[in-house]
Length: 197
Image 1 (cartoon, one colour):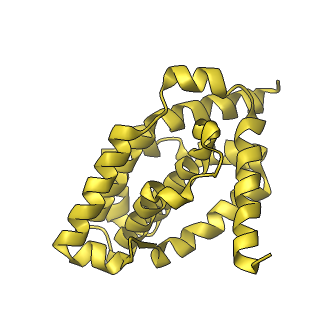
Image 2 (cartoon, rainbow, N blue to C red):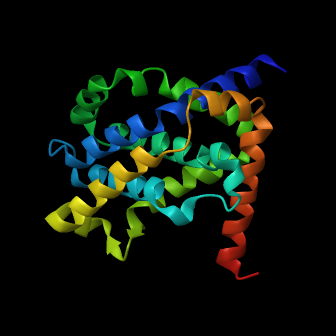
Protein backbone atom coordinates (compact mmCIF):
# COMPACT_ATOMS: atom_id res chain seq x y z
CA UNK A 1 0.00 0.00 0.00
CA UNK A 2 1.43 3.38 -0.99
CA UNK A 3 2.15 6.09 1.56
CA UNK A 4 -0.62 8.45 0.29
CA UNK A 5 -3.09 5.58 0.57
CA UNK A 6 -1.95 4.76 4.12
CA UNK A 7 -2.36 8.43 5.03
CA UNK A 8 -5.80 8.54 3.39
CA UNK A 9 -7.00 5.46 5.30
CA UNK A 10 -5.67 6.81 8.61
CA UNK A 11 -7.29 10.17 7.90
CA UNK A 12 -10.64 8.60 7.15
CA UNK A 13 -10.50 6.44 10.26
CA UNK A 14 -10.01 9.52 12.43
CA UNK A 15 -12.68 11.51 10.52
CA UNK A 16 -15.23 8.73 10.83
CA UNK A 17 -14.62 8.40 14.58
CA UNK A 18 -14.89 12.17 15.07
CA UNK A 19 -18.01 12.70 12.90
CA UNK A 20 -20.39 13.13 15.87
CA UNK A 21 -18.01 15.69 17.42
CA UNK A 22 -17.55 17.48 14.07
CA UNK A 23 -21.32 17.69 13.70
CA UNK A 24 -21.36 19.64 16.99
CA UNK A 25 -18.95 22.14 15.41
CA UNK A 26 -21.42 22.61 12.54
CA UNK A 27 -24.15 23.33 15.12
CA UNK A 28 -21.81 25.88 16.72
CA UNK A 29 -21.40 27.55 13.31
CA UNK A 30 -25.17 27.56 12.81
CA UNK A 31 -25.62 29.38 16.13
CA UNK A 32 -22.67 31.78 15.84
CA UNK A 33 -24.27 35.14 15.13
CA UNK A 34 -20.87 36.69 14.39
CA UNK A 35 -20.74 34.61 11.21
CA UNK A 36 -22.52 35.95 8.12
CA UNK A 37 -26.00 34.59 7.53
CA UNK A 38 -24.90 32.92 4.27
CA UNK A 39 -22.13 31.02 6.10
CA UNK A 40 -24.54 29.89 8.79
CA UNK A 41 -26.87 28.61 6.05
CA UNK A 42 -24.03 26.45 4.70
CA UNK A 43 -23.55 25.02 8.20
CA UNK A 44 -27.27 24.19 8.46
CA UNK A 45 -27.19 22.56 5.02
CA UNK A 46 -24.24 20.42 6.11
CA UNK A 47 -26.07 19.36 9.28
CA UNK A 48 -29.13 18.40 7.22
CA UNK A 49 -26.91 16.45 4.83
CA UNK A 50 -25.36 14.44 7.65
CA UNK A 51 -28.48 13.71 9.75
CA UNK A 52 -30.75 13.04 6.78
CA UNK A 53 -31.42 9.28 6.71
CA UNK A 54 -31.92 9.11 2.94
CA UNK A 55 -28.35 10.27 2.46
CA UNK A 56 -26.86 6.96 3.55
CA UNK A 57 -25.66 4.54 0.96
CA UNK A 58 -28.26 1.82 0.55
CA UNK A 59 -26.07 -1.08 1.69
CA UNK A 60 -26.35 -0.86 5.47
CA UNK A 61 -23.63 -3.51 5.89
CA UNK A 62 -21.24 -0.88 4.67
CA UNK A 63 -22.08 1.37 7.63
CA UNK A 64 -18.51 2.60 7.91
CA UNK A 65 -18.11 3.57 4.28
CA UNK A 66 -21.65 4.93 4.04
CA UNK A 67 -20.66 7.80 6.31
CA UNK A 68 -17.59 8.61 4.21
CA UNK A 69 -19.26 11.26 2.06
CA UNK A 70 -20.72 12.83 5.22
CA UNK A 71 -17.29 13.24 6.77
CA UNK A 72 -15.88 14.92 3.66
CA UNK A 73 -18.96 17.08 3.02
CA UNK A 74 -18.97 18.31 6.60
CA UNK A 75 -15.31 19.31 6.38
CA UNK A 76 -15.72 20.95 2.97
CA UNK A 77 -18.75 22.87 4.25
CA UNK A 78 -17.00 24.01 7.44
CA UNK A 79 -13.99 25.12 5.38
CA UNK A 80 -16.39 27.12 3.20
CA UNK A 81 -18.00 28.66 6.31
CA UNK A 82 -14.60 29.81 7.58
CA UNK A 83 -13.27 30.94 4.19
CA UNK A 84 -16.32 33.09 3.40
CA UNK A 85 -16.60 34.74 6.82
CA UNK A 86 -13.53 36.99 6.94
CA UNK A 87 -12.12 37.72 10.40
CA UNK A 88 -15.12 36.12 12.09
CA UNK A 89 -14.38 32.92 10.18
CA UNK A 90 -10.77 33.00 11.33
CA UNK A 91 -11.93 33.50 14.92
CA UNK A 92 -14.38 30.60 14.58
CA UNK A 93 -11.67 28.29 13.18
CA UNK A 94 -9.37 29.23 16.07
CA UNK A 95 -11.96 27.80 18.51
CA UNK A 96 -11.69 24.34 16.89
CA UNK A 97 -8.04 23.75 15.97
CA UNK A 98 -8.58 19.97 16.06
CA UNK A 99 -10.70 20.29 12.91
CA UNK A 100 -9.31 23.31 11.08
CA UNK A 101 -5.54 23.01 11.58
CA UNK A 102 -4.16 21.11 8.61
CA UNK A 103 -7.62 20.80 7.01
CA UNK A 104 -6.50 22.06 3.58
CA UNK A 105 -3.60 19.59 3.52
CA UNK A 106 -5.89 16.74 4.63
CA UNK A 107 -8.41 17.55 1.90
CA UNK A 108 -5.57 17.51 -0.64
CA UNK A 109 -4.68 13.97 0.52
CA UNK A 110 -8.30 13.05 -0.21
CA UNK A 111 -8.17 14.70 -3.62
CA UNK A 112 -5.04 12.70 -4.48
CA UNK A 113 -6.85 9.41 -3.82
CA UNK A 114 -10.45 10.31 -4.71
CA UNK A 115 -9.89 12.40 -7.84
CA UNK A 116 -13.21 13.20 -9.54
CA UNK A 117 -15.17 12.05 -6.47
CA UNK A 118 -13.67 14.97 -4.57
CA UNK A 119 -14.75 17.37 -7.34
CA UNK A 120 -18.26 15.88 -7.18
CA UNK A 121 -18.46 16.51 -3.42
CA UNK A 122 -17.03 20.02 -3.72
CA UNK A 123 -19.72 20.92 -6.26
CA UNK A 124 -22.35 19.72 -3.78
CA UNK A 125 -21.22 22.27 -1.15
CA UNK A 126 -22.79 25.11 -3.17
CA UNK A 127 -26.07 23.17 -3.23
CA UNK A 128 -26.16 22.75 0.55
CA UNK A 129 -28.07 26.02 0.88
CA UNK A 130 -30.97 24.46 -1.04
CA UNK A 131 -31.33 21.48 1.28
CA UNK A 132 -34.66 20.77 2.90
CA UNK A 133 -35.10 18.56 5.91
CA UNK A 134 -38.44 17.05 6.88
CA UNK A 135 -40.07 19.55 4.56
CA UNK A 136 -38.33 22.54 6.13
CA UNK A 137 -35.99 24.92 4.35
CA UNK A 138 -32.73 26.15 5.85
CA UNK A 139 -34.17 29.60 6.56
CA UNK A 140 -36.88 27.98 8.69
CA UNK A 141 -34.30 26.09 10.73
CA UNK A 142 -32.40 29.31 11.40
CA UNK A 143 -35.40 31.52 12.13
CA UNK A 144 -37.98 29.22 13.70
CA UNK A 145 -37.31 28.04 17.26
CA UNK A 146 -39.35 24.86 16.86
CA UNK A 147 -37.66 23.83 13.60
CA UNK A 148 -34.25 24.58 15.09
CA UNK A 149 -35.09 22.50 18.16
CA UNK A 150 -36.11 19.57 15.95
CA UNK A 151 -32.83 19.75 14.06
CA UNK A 152 -30.95 19.79 17.40
CA UNK A 153 -32.88 16.75 18.59
CA UNK A 154 -32.15 14.86 15.39
CA UNK A 155 -28.49 15.85 15.59
CA UNK A 156 -28.37 14.53 19.13
CA UNK A 157 -30.10 11.33 18.01
CA UNK A 158 -27.58 10.92 15.21
CA UNK A 159 -24.66 11.35 17.59
CA UNK A 160 -26.18 8.93 20.13
CA UNK A 161 -27.01 6.20 17.58
CA UNK A 162 -23.90 6.62 15.43
CA UNK A 163 -22.78 3.03 14.76
CA UNK A 164 -19.08 3.62 14.17
CA UNK A 165 -16.20 3.37 16.62
CA UNK A 166 -12.48 2.60 16.56
CA UNK A 167 -12.94 -1.16 16.69
CA UNK A 168 -15.49 -1.32 13.86
CA UNK A 169 -13.35 0.96 11.73
CA UNK A 170 -10.23 -1.08 12.40
CA UNK A 171 -12.05 -4.15 11.09
CA UNK A 172 -13.79 -2.54 8.13
CA UNK A 173 -11.45 0.12 6.80
CA UNK A 174 -8.14 -1.23 5.61
CA UNK A 175 -7.81 0.23 2.11
CA UNK A 176 -8.87 3.35 0.23
CA UNK A 177 -11.15 1.45 -2.16
CA UNK A 178 -13.50 0.63 0.76
CA UNK A 179 -14.35 4.34 0.78
CA UNK A 180 -14.04 5.19 -2.90
CA UNK A 181 -16.12 2.22 -4.14
CA UNK A 182 -19.07 3.22 -1.95
CA UNK A 183 -18.77 6.85 -3.00
CA UNK A 184 -18.73 5.85 -6.68
CA UNK A 185 -21.91 3.86 -6.08
CA UNK A 186 -23.46 6.85 -4.33
CA UNK A 187 -22.52 9.17 -7.21
CA UNK A 188 -24.03 6.74 -9.74
CA UNK A 189 -27.25 6.46 -7.68
CA UNK A 190 -27.51 10.22 -7.57
CA UNK A 191 -27.01 10.53 -11.30
CA UNK A 192 -29.70 7.91 -11.92
CA UNK A 193 -32.09 9.78 -9.64
CA UNK A 194 -31.43 13.05 -11.48
CA UNK A 195 -31.80 11.62 -14.97
CA UNK A 196 -34.60 9.22 -14.06
CA UNK A 197 -32.67 6.40 -15.73
